[in-house]
Image 1: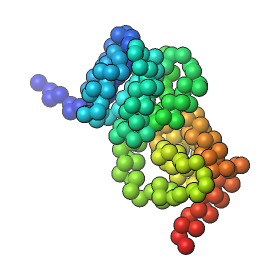
Image 2: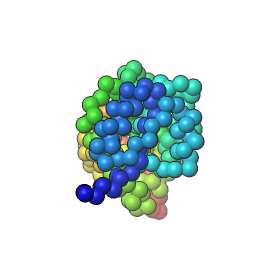
Image 3: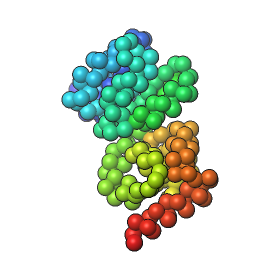
Length: 213
């Protein structure tokens, strides 16, 4: 009898629709992940604070506290695993709010199983790679006096841009869609007062030089 392949890690799925939970469970299990499903956020919180999965898929519209509320309680930006928000509403404002509160990216329903697996594979691998590299980040140590502080993810995106990466390349490296990268970039420019990409690089280089004096 063939030995069962080792699990690639746990994925927590939070959705109040049993059909969606079943579909995701089937697709992700077939890809080698161990899937644990929750019908509401309270059940997730009870486990997510004591166990760290490889990734969390969190639906925006769930009973009780919304997915955004749960994301805030998990402190998404600092949670030790990537969190994807899922919604069938196509609500852009909600997507932006989710990203600002630490969600790695946003997935819209309806989705194809193969696309979900590919995106999660990429995000989980990118997250692990970034964790290993985080101590050597030059941007992470920079301070921009008088400016609104950048989030950790914004600093990761900024580092990609100052290294000359395109939206697509930055997205691939960070496991984020190019559209979300563009949202981060716009937010970074607004916070640092940059008029364009060249201005953004100039601000970073000036800050780096000042920090070395």
